[in-house]
Length: 119
Image 1 (cartoon, rainbow, N blue to C red):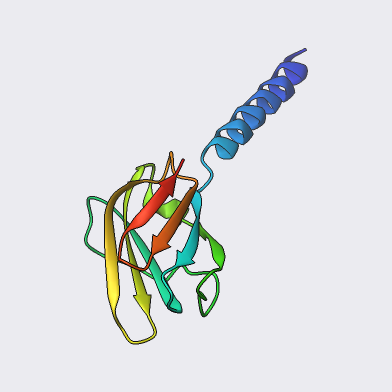
Image 2: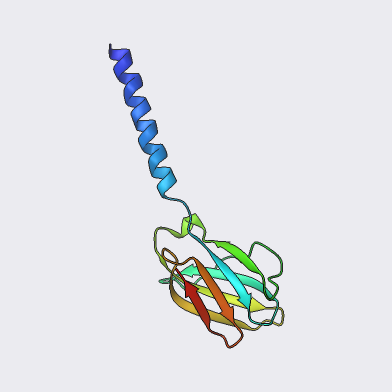
């Protein structure tokens, strides 16, 4: 009986741990390049920090008219508010601040330096 109780407790603990793991997946959204330029870097950072970290663009180049899925690193914590910096091949960049990645589905980058967000 004692052995059955221990095994049952371990099973329940493993189940609860597994449930928590599936709820803490990294955030992601899609970015569509409608700028007329080839882009080559995408950086994101939690809104409250200033360190851009590593380029998270999944490809080397981000051609005009294409879309990519951008995954926000899980080690950025549970915050939803992010800033994004995007660079082109000539080193020019634009930043967008205060984006809510928890509600965001797709960002369309426009030629005039603005973006349209779809939730």
